[in-house]
Amino acid sequence: MDQITEIFTQLQASLLTLVIPIAVVGFILWGLATLLTPIIPDWAQGMRGYFQKSMLTVAFLGFATAFVTALYSLGGGA
Image (tube, rainbow, N blue to C red):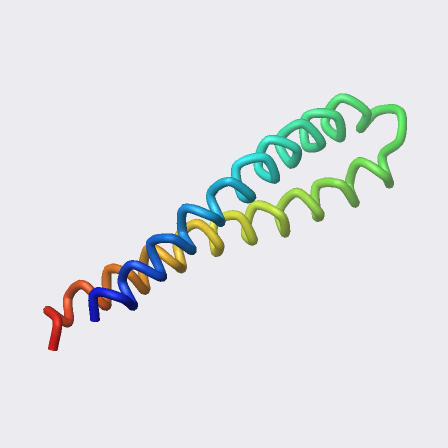
């Protein structure tokens, strides 16, 4: 049981190094889309959709591994 928890903890740490830069790029693109809305409304609207999808992916990758690790920890080493 401890090995499985350790694997998921390592996976979570590895994913955080990937997820945080993706989130930063997503916020920058969202700000750019907001600034360019009066000039290019169709493009900016599409970018908002991509921002929502990327933030859902970031949330899933960040929280899914933590959730699985917590569930294994609740098992108590059976």
